[in-house]
Structures are given as C-alpha cells and as structure tokens.
Amino acid sequence: MKSCTVVTVCGSGVVTSSMIALKIKDQLREKGWDATMYEASPVSLSSVITGKDIDVIVCASPVTEDVGIPKVKGMGMVTGMGEEKVINEIIAVLEEKHKD
Amino acid sequence: MEQAIYRELIVTGVDAKDSEDAIRQVGQLFLKEGFVKDTYIDAVCEREKVFATGLELEGISIAMPHTDIIHVNKPGVTVAKLAHPVEFEHMGEPGRKVQAEMLFMMAITNPEDQIGTIMRVLGVFQNKEALEAFKAAETEDELYEAAAKYIG
Image 1 (cartoon, each protein chain N blue to C red):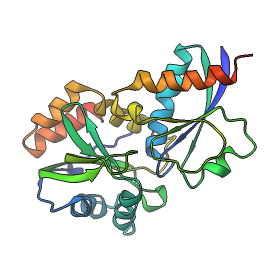
Image 2: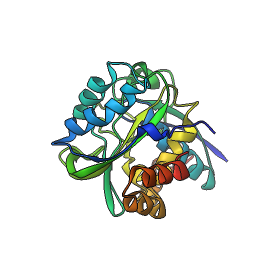
Image 3: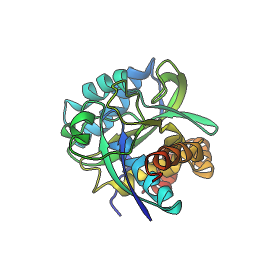
C-alpha cells in the first residue's frame, strides 16, 4: 500500500465533501493507495492544507484559488456517473507525484 | 443506525415558483419540527446561490440544499416531491441548469456522527432502483416508505 493525502472540497466543507471522501478512500484502497482524507470548503481550504503535504484536491464545488496542488473535478462521485474517471484522474496525479 | 427520516419531514405536491420558494416551503418542515434554528432557511437560500446543489441523476434531477451545522439543532433529511420541476443550478458546474423534481434537504449537526445518513443519501442518488421507488411514490405515505427503506 502506498500512502497519499487527499482533500475533498464542497461548499460547506461538510456534507458533499464527506460523501465523496469515503467513496474516494474506499476506491483508492482497492487500487493500492492508503489515503488520508481531509475535508474543506473553498473558504477553509488554505487553512486546511497549511502544514500538510497534500497530493491532490478533489472538488465538488469550483475552486478558483490556485494553491499549487493539482485539482480534480469530483462531481462524478456524487452523481455516480463518471466515478471511474474521477478515480483515474486522482491516481494519475498520485502516480506522477510518487513516481520515484 | 441513526434516524434521519421522519414522517413529518416527508411532503409531496410542493407547488413552488422557483428554487428559493421550494427551499423556503420545504425548510418550514424542519423549522416547524424544531430540527433547525430560525436562521437555517435564509442560510440555505444564501448558500444555494453561491454553492448550488442541483444534481442530474439517472432519470431524475434533484437538489440537496443544506448549510452549515451551526443552523441545525437535530439531524434529519426532508424528502419532498415538487408539484412541477423548478430550476436549480447544478452542483459544481456554474451555469448548468437542472429541472429538479425532488428535494433532499439535509440537516447535519456532525458529519462524522451522521456519515451513515450522508452515505445512504448518496447511495440513493446512485441507485437506479431507489430513484425509481422515489419517482413512483405518489402519496406521502408511499414516499415515506421509500425514504425509510433507503435512507432510514
């Protein structure tokens, strides 16, 4: 198992981010990644990521701020349509970052 | 399993002129039963403008309005069928409109404690059989039965 750190973002940082966090964690585990999950709103994002080594941000609401961490659109995890695409995009980011 | 569905939070035939009217009418159920503070409805309306919650699912569009935990007293989910669809903006995709036929309005006090509820609601969104059951429900009793079965 490789380790990674993922932040999920939604409007309130409560409901939707929790929804997709658990699904992402489960599906990453199946693909060999042990994910530490954090949840944030666009407002709390910069404080949530401060002092942490975050690999990828998965957004269920648009995040315009550039915090220097790759972002993946996570809506597919909510509707169930396009879940695999979301996971594949997350893994592509993780593999790029952890290639050594 | 924490309870989220209550008969008094189930409603059909909500005749709303727009998304805000729908939120205000359905939010009244929460308010009347003491699930939320009197700041909740305004907070949900404001939040919906900034972070929309419309979702186009398989065969039906819905919205899941909610807001910050400080406006909530007790966790629950209202399940409402609208008399006719109203326009919501799609979550995460500014500018994309959906014609919502149902509202799943959420009152959450602690996402960790209520993760079961949150995940069961998400499960409904992604479960064709469950969505069909909600669509087919015509009376409030039938809607309650579907909500209790799939959300609990």
